[in-house]
Amino acid sequence: MESHDERIARRADERAELERQLDREEAEGQSSAAIQRQRGGKLGSAAFLAGIVLLAAALLSTCVTLIRLSGHDFAEASRTGQATVAHCTEQGPVTTRGFGYWYRCVSTIRWDDGGTDRLVIDEVFTPADIGRAVRVGDVGEHRGSRELAREDTPARPWLTWIGVTVGIIGLLPTFLVAMILRELLRFRRR
View 1: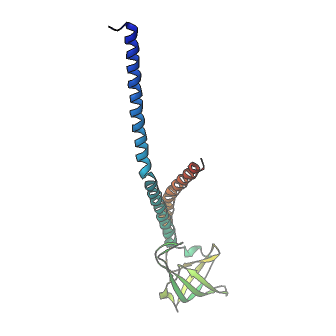
View 2 (view 1 turned 90 degrees about the vertical axis):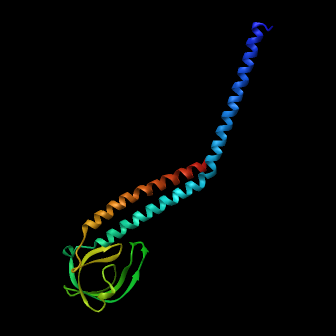
View 3 (view 1 turned 90 degrees about the horizontal axis):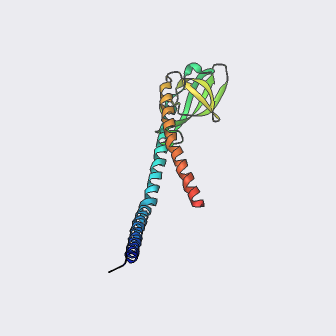
């Protein structure tokens, strides 16, 4: 028969062995889970990031398209005149001006104040306008090019508001991409 101290020592050894066995099983379970997570993680993260980039690009291009289609108000023109279109080239389907086809046309404008300009104008004229006089108004300059408004085409400011709303929504995935890339680059520096 064992003494009291021997039984306590034997129980302490059994308990220590069980704790070591539990620690080994727990460590094996964690390492296998970590390995499984890392196996598909890079490809999944890259696909997720690419999807967010495409979503942001689509939303921002839609924003630009809607704002482009809204047009300018002829009533806001600083001067008016008659434009005669010489020729047009088709642009699109995806450009820095959004989605869809539009025309870049060379036109001669005779202003009502007596001046004449020969300009390359985007998105105002079509090939159907070649050779005929179109009443236009000068609404200023944007990025170094003259902006015109047609008298026969109404402005659609509601398209501008929809475009701005879509653009704000499009900025959210753009910021998300920036934050993800920042974290990825920060993680690689460590």
